[in-house]
Length: 309
Length: 121
Image (cartoon, rainbow over all chains, first blue to last red; front, side):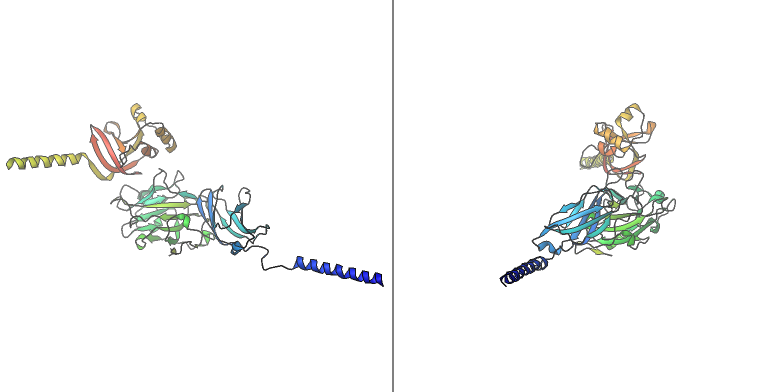
């Protein structure tokens, strides 16, 4: 009887210990999630031919004491080691990329116990930034009245840099400027010029973006090929600040599109700079050299006063 | 009184002639960028942009030439801030035709061009 009592008591305590242990290992002791919330609204823009800038909205788990930062994985080109990004950061410039390659950027929030959130992902490709023309000078497009300087611009000239061209070279214009009536900038085929030969480079324009100071402020969240493009001109007299627009064009002999963003400077209350009859507009171009790579797309503009028309 | 009027007339003519010496044109002067070395030997090479920039960096001056042969005119080109624009000109040496808008002055028989705009044409 004594043995039975000892036996039962042993079983009782063993069961109690087992139950107690099981309880602490299977039931959360508080409401802390086991993995962080993912960052949201991941967007990208091309900084230059080798760099892409990413921007996102912070994970809501940043206030958690276990929050350790972000982990960025880049796939698509040469293998890159995962990049650790500190808590509180909402932008990051990825360098060492190659123009024309579509990279997948996958961003995850991370806890100190190495638990990762679901990834936020975006595809992007770096693109060349042209701030100077083939002569290392500002990129200018001259007014119609300037008989001697060009009213057209070839984005990707013989030296793989922008080149200002005159009307007889209209076949190679990517965009043109006409100041005969208003200040019209856009597809050469839509401008009232008597070209020596018909423009062969089809140019189509999508959104016009206002309220910006730089191309670096225009982040996109999906591919440009999804946009609605049309052969058209933009009447600059309707705007009173810097503008940018997205365009695509076909180089002579190519069947696929090249994509670009164009930033038009508004200086001292005007798009036209200099003195008549050689006034000009000044542009900066983000240009994807590889055809068929739509590196930019729909817009979620960061600044609250930005708008799309 | 008559003398004063004559003096004023002479002064007016002098001012007009002086202004003619500094001609500001909105039409570009068309020509080609050449190096002084090429000018000296009378043989003009076809520059690449990189080669011309390297040559300018070594100290070779680049100038602007209009016309050819006996009708050729040489211009020493300066930026509007008064600095010699040789290195800037060198960046245009690969272009077959260049236009410059600016002010021309003739000083001691030498053409000085104060450049406002330069473009390949």
